[in-house]
Image (tube, rainbow, N blue to C red; front, side, top):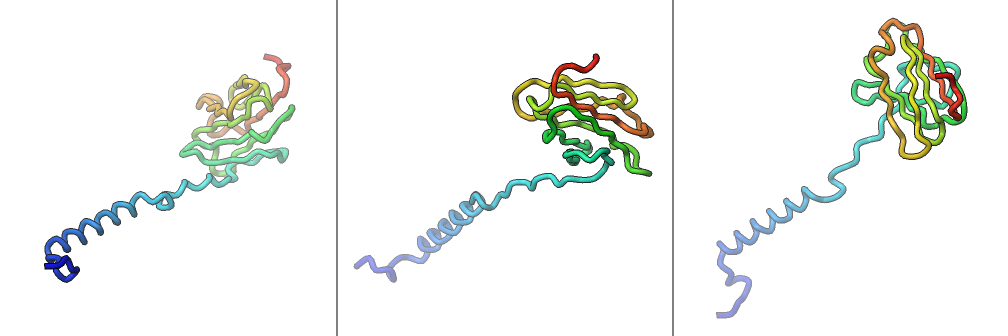
Length: 150
C-alpha cells in the first residue's frame, strides 16, 4: 500500500492537528507586539506655580512629582495649593545633576538638598513635617553655584 494522504489514519491526523493548534496558540501569547509599554505619565495642574517656569507636575502614585529637570542657573518659584483641596499628602522633586547645585524648599521647615555635578535625574522626597495641609505656600529656590547661606 502506498503512503497516500487518504491512507493516513484519522487518529494520528487528529492528534497532529491538536498539537499544531496548541503550538500556534502558545506562540500567539508571546508575540512582541502583544505587550505594549505603559503610557508616559500625563502632566497635571495640582499646584499654582508663580512666576511661570518650565516646571511640570505629575502624579507618581499618591505623590505629586514636581519636575525641575528643565531648570538651570539660579531661580525661585512659589508653589500654592489649589483652594479647597490643600496640599498633596506627599511631594517629591526631580532634578538633573549638573544643571543646579542646590535645591532649597521652604514651607513649614527649610529643607536643603545638595545635588551632585553629574549623573542621572534624581528624586528628592520632601519630608511630611516640611509642610502641613494649611501651609500658605512653599518656596522653591534652585542655585547653580554652591553659594547660598546654610
